[in-house]
Image 1 (tube, rainbow, N blue to C red):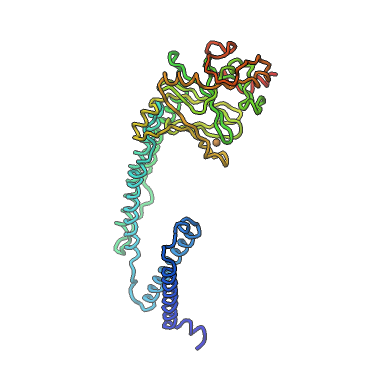
Image 2 (image 1 turned 45 degrees about the vertical axis):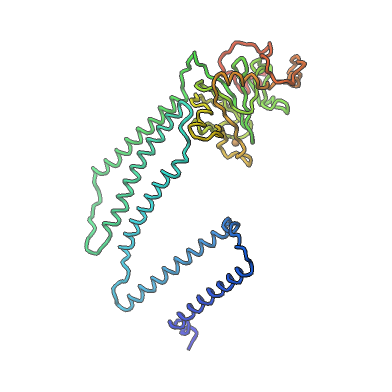
Length: 418
Ligand SMILES: [Cu+2]
């Protein structure tokens, strides 16, 4: 017998497969039994489950399994064909049933996402404009869910009910103007409404009419790799000018102390804001693009080097109130960087505390000033004897100035004039 004939002999091939399978299985079983006998305690599989190689092998094994099943079926069909018997497997029915299974599993997945992961959504918005954003989010979610479920029911059930049975012939239906109009106009109208809502909400957030009786509190936030600097305006309510050319080891923000508005500016380790009072964030960056992100307040805006951006919002729920709402006494509002800005990006977060006006007033006077004697000397200002102490006392006499518009932050301008 030639080698070719020897290999194609069915009986021998089948025997070889059985022997190989039996041999490998028993070898593995013996090894496992020996392993179990030698080591009394079970093997720690945790590091294996964590490795990528394990899942790669598992995936390859699954592919191999599918390939073997596929090949076996092909052989079965070819054998029936060669023997002039009718096809053994009705693929149309199998495909139809698979479509229905996919529909059921998929819809269960949607239900799971809405209930289990839906519970992990952010709590209610803690700011005035945040309610509008949540409303838009919910409307969009409801509309898309209805369309999603409707189209998927139609798609998969049609595939099941109208599968080829050999008894029907497909109806040739190339064109229908009425249908074309409906599926163009309806989505266009829905999208127009959604886009307009977004546009109007955006305008209401970014183009506010200032209430003279409730002027916003200005807070400047400067981002850098990988930290935030929070600057409060001090007693004058105005955040002073700064210039990147003045940045030194002692003057990390490059504050221009020739601008008197800078003399009472304070630094803070956390952002403390009074409830129901508008806050005007002045956002700048020292190096690369970062993104200022306060998820609970639905606030997010990039901080861009060389340019100042503003975001005004009004917090409506204090930290203590939110702790009761989410039933977590350790709850804290935070702000983050939401732009992948480098290796320490994950570390860019700070605490936000929303408190009553009285608590805020008591806190803010305790915050230290940016200016110190080194900076005073540098800018030719008279030094004060006890500069090390935090500025609990009222601001310097030089800093007294009536509160004007807080938009006095004009980066670079003084330097360019020189
Ligand atoms: Cu960042």
